[in-house]
Length: 124
Image (cartoon, rainbow, N blue to C red; front, top):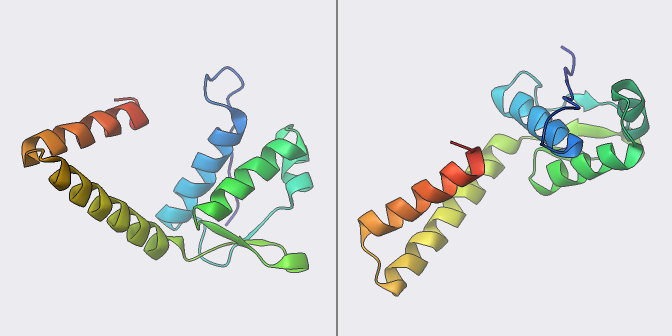
């Protein structure tokens, strides 16, 4: 099992975001199993032809999202992120539902707002 990352230099998406999204998708799909040791920041930067700060930024975002965890000198590993991501999404959805209810929006208006936000986020 190996980490496969392709950075599209012609893409409008920043390289750190491409890296973050690809690692996240591979971890969530199980292609990178929980406990998989990721390359060092410098090693991955060198391999991909990116600046170390670019890889570090992606790793920080992934750690913030609960996808990876750093264990000091032992390295960076894929975390059991599926449960954490599901819990965080459920909490965000509950907070949104409570907020739109307080605003007096109908269920249809709230759903429309969610659909619009998802389209904007996913580009569809």
